Amino acid sequence: MPDKNSETFLSFIGNLDKRVELDKNIKHGDIRYYGALSMMASKASYENKAYIETTVNDHWKMEFLDSYDFWNEYQKKATTQAFILREKNVNSEMIIVAFRGTESFDADAWCTDFDISWYKLRDIGKVHSGFTKALGMQNKADWPEDISWADDKPAPAYYAIRKLLIGLLQGNDRARFILTGHSLGGALAILFPAVLAYHGEKWDWLLERLEGVYTFGQPRVGDEQFGEFMKKKLEKHKVKYYRFVYGYDMVPRLPYDGTTLMFKHFGTCIYFNSFYEGKVVGEQPNKNYFSPSSYIPKIINAAWELIRSLIIPYTKGPGYKEGFLLLVVRLIGLVIAGVPAHSPQDYVNATRL
Picture: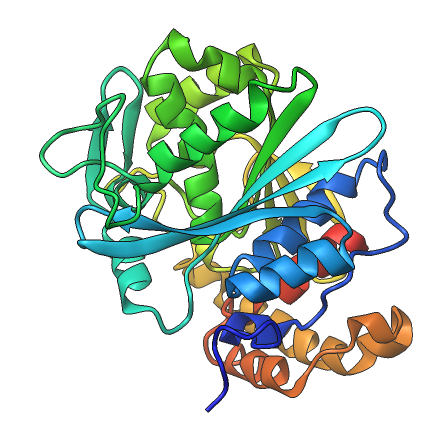
């Protein structure tokens, strides 16, 4: 049996894209830099602590601070994961908090995703209940500003990460931080500043130190009122929010944006087609996954992506070679279009190319 805590062990997500090194052509100061670094951190967040520590310290030459399991009060277990790294350079210090997305065979994480009931944040709007619970909402107690927790169980994500950031930022006026995540991790990344705002102006200083939120394949997290509130709050504190969407990825098109569910995206959407050509759009094309008019184009695109997987090492270089497992997932895309497009491989490629 493989040791799941080994620095060489890879999750199912990790086996879809085994790349560890950062792109050496994207240097600090490049406009692509934090997007590319955030995506690699989001991909690494699916792995165990030893793997992440080795990756950050030895391959990226940055400082791994720690990896955490966080308590979900509703599921009565630790279901939320994130890790924190620190990048130092001559001008500033950047702290990156990367939330883990949905693991493929984690039933608790899938329960979080499918809990699409609304939770009302007073004066802010309605948000996805499952994501809110995963971030740290307290059972029968709303969102208290502060809580205490027993030493014998993990802390809820929001409160623990907020405490960690206070300790990291208060002693260094130049330090700033980034929130990032892929899939579910992206939803948690954008909800974190929303809860800071919910708890009042006392926490504005943390929002002032928030450099940006970078999400990849992020599902919708709230209604239109929530989106309008967050746009104003992020603009006030000059926080960059970039929502990366690749091709026909099904997850950013869920939950449904319609007259029944009324989930809405907001922020800057950077959309990439299957040639990794990016552009800024107000909403990704075919905004809802279950759109009959897009079915045939999705299948045609899935066939092209399968062909591309075989030729991309020759057109873009050996660093873009795809493994057998991802090839199998791309075959599944011929039946269920949009599944392989959610793979970290395409998001890493998009941020690099």
